[in-house]
Amino acid sequence: MSNQTALVTGGSTGIGRAIAARLANDGFNVVITGRHEDSLQEAASQNENISYVVADVTNPDEVTNTVSEVKNRHGRLDVLVNNAGVAPIAPVGDITADHYDFIFNVNVRGLIDTSLKALPMLRESKGQIINISSIVSDRPMPNMTVYAASKAAVTTLSKGWAKELAPEGVRVNIVSPGPIETPIFGKLGLPQEQQDEMGAQIASMVPMGRFGTADEVASSVGYLASPAASYVTGADFSIDGGMRA
Image (cartoon, rainbow, N blue to C red; front, top):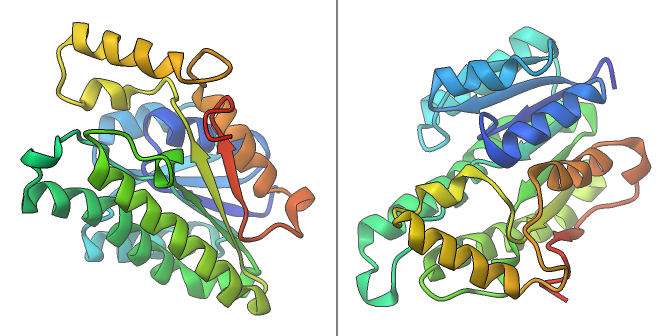
């Protein structure tokens, strides 16, 4: 993969950080994006093949700049990993327009915008898009219904794009994590005691009895990005310890 390039949105922490490390270790030139330069610098320090662009996927100008930077630095794009996402909690009675807009602007509109801007380079390289969805796309949980709806949109878009772009040699696949140990749980706005209780409840629902790791999710992305997955498109890989079965 030494002459290939990957772009990972939301690549500074958690699953995105692990994906960037996996792809860089596999030989890709990796560009990661995020809103905070300090965490991007730390993530890029994992491997000399990783560089970064400070960018918010909800800002079209910054998305355009990101794709231009990938082209300027590496001349090509082979894999786009749409990983940037948010998952705030809100009971149904507390859902507001701002809550909806925030989630869908990041999880859906940002994904679409990034994919469309990157598509000319992906068509040229016969590359692929890997969209990070979630098992809640068809197993919604209480208090996270708007998030689940946004991930259902990601899954539907991905499967439609897979059929539409296959004749052009561009593959589109989905990785749907279940409960994963990442910093996102610390961003839910819950007290630590409530976070711990929620984590224990979720783990009890997983047949394997534990949360997964970001590296376990990254391994599936590494496979999809490799020549071994050359006949795979429109697939949805559940990384969930059997929770979706």
